[in-house]
Length: 293
Image (cartoon, rainbow, N blue to C red; front, side, top):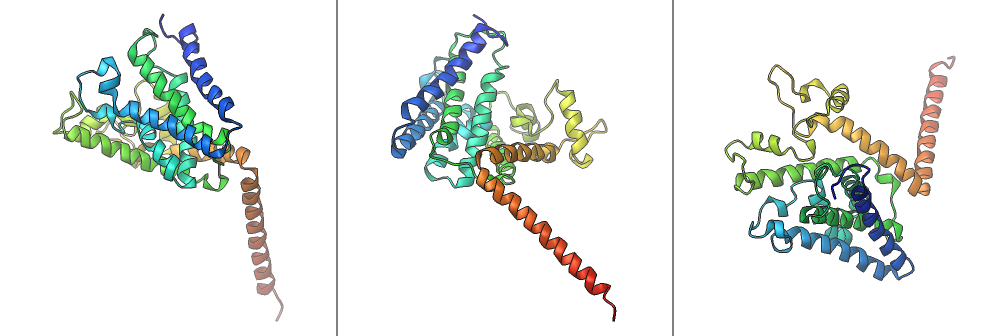
């Protein structure tokens, strides 16, 4: 059975992934907050363990030893690694970040599994892929669904900055593994070229075959950050920083307004009061300037 968009195998894995999260929700929705936290932490910890123990658990990795595959080499891997620690010790901002990014990254990977299109649905790498992304999705969204974490609207403008910090950490991780020779087939004497080949989260340059996306980003990014035919290179992360920040902030603003109505209403009241204060200030200033002596 092969995986194609719209095929039985494609929907089978989506249903299994959503079914896992839905089942855990209904099993624990009436339990104590302590039990709910143990559940979420357990799901995240299982995901971290399977990520770190790939050479021991999965047959396709037997004998490969420790490599970049057990590190924070892309966004999903980074989120899997930090999830248990954010759940245990994270600030409200980091928990919001994990909720937004973990839920989105996990579900997008499941909905758009382009690595497996045309491949067999019954292979160990497919099992690993859907298993880890299903756990990432579940451990990220369950805290909100179970009521042990509440989205804070006031963090809407901060999430984009945390995202870029995560990109820097991922890029640094890949840089270290390339330099140590733990990224097979890459030239440790040319880090920039090697990182460009890896292109984690598209942070080094635009993805291939997405010309429309490159054109859109180019329209919103300063030319100094963009490469061109004259030999200039794309500036890592900065080449898409502005449009990506705008996109993340708009989406988080909308979601925060839905899930934290009180926070959103307080923000609107703050804006209104601010405009009223400014209006009053200029009105009084105008009166003083035009007052007859």
